[in-house]
Image (cartoon, rainbow, N blue to C red):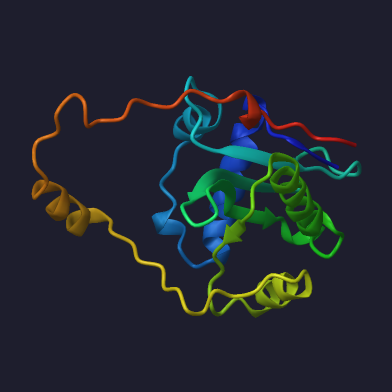
Length: 183
């Protein structure tokens, strides 16, 4: 079963993020705290949303998908960017990952979003094969760039001082951002 995450799921989501980071050989980089996740997912101005995969035979969630809306200037519509998809090893191969992706695809179609995107590590052949089996295609002509740490701070230091008008306030959750799941 797939359902929208609730605030009570934050400890399980945090644990699964750490499990995913360990699988991706990056546990040291997974620094998000439960408090940060609670604020990002359920605070006054949510920045992200999460789905939970459950299995009736297990007391705790077996997987999750954490996502946020993006926007395409080419299509003029929002889309979904899947930040994390994780199914615990004992529950893999039972359809939970596909069910999470299908629910996100349903959200896209229902809301008129034209794109559903995510990244995958180039060495993760099982996931790449799974995504290809669903009809997803690699965006090989695009390369992801990231600024973080000192390079991010150095570039920020070159920006002109912000005027009160140029700093956008947090955007409150829109009515259409609420996750509705149909059974």
